[in-house]
Length: 100
Image (cartoon, rainbow, N blue to C red):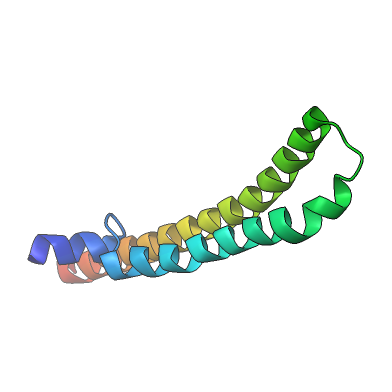
């Protein structure tokens, strides 16, 4: 258990609550945005288009939405890495102070 707690503090592991919180936030937002686009925005845009044009418009809209959420995931990852670096730095300082 202590080993796990140290790994969490160092940022080698993230607590399941943090992971769960992130995904319980991002997944519903992604689904909601996709539905909004498919139900409200795209029908107006695709009037008069053939099937291949409609597929291309849908692909672009879905990619745009997913890119936004990938960026949020990357920000989350960067936050975790920052915490890890801080924990590692603090641990090195404590080890250095203990050696003195």
